[in-house]
Image 1 (cartoon, one colour):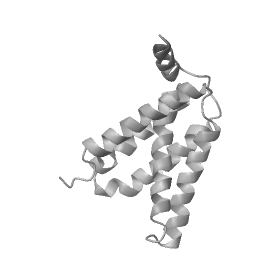
Image 2 (image 1 turned 60 degrees about the vertical axis):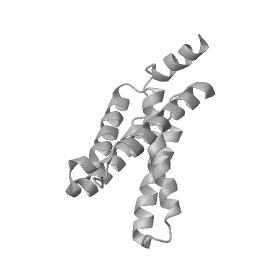
Image 3 (image 1 turned 90 degrees about the vertical axis):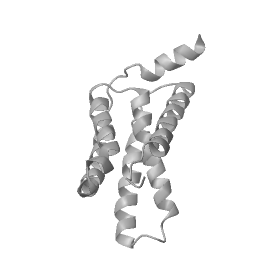
Amino acid sequence: MAGLDVLRDVVMPRPRGVWLTYAIPLGVYGYLGLLGVHEGVREVAHLLVLIAICLLQLWKPTLLGWAVLFVPLVAYVLSLLGKLTDLPVNERVIFLGLGVAASLALWLGRPQGNWRSTSVAVVIASALMFAVVRILPLTGTR
């Protein structure tokens, strides 16, 4: 029964924290979406989902919602760090700054939960991100 209690804790609504916790990632995801919208809605659909989750988190925060926003941002920052030599300096500063600022805002304002619930939320969010990246073709290169 402990497993069900952890899952219940992951999706249980939390008290609202500082609104900047989700407003900063909302701005970052919105900006990245605007940059890619000329490629078509299909190319930015995943960002639209993350924007919707940001808006839901502003209203009713959960640990799982936080993790679904946090994991892609950390992956984004890590992927940019792997491409530092490939990007011009201005893009490095802008995109890395956006990713780090949003990740830091989410980390500092994360909903309070025990380590087990937080870990489960991050694992679920990571599995969802993996499914989106591997199963759904987001680039139209099929």
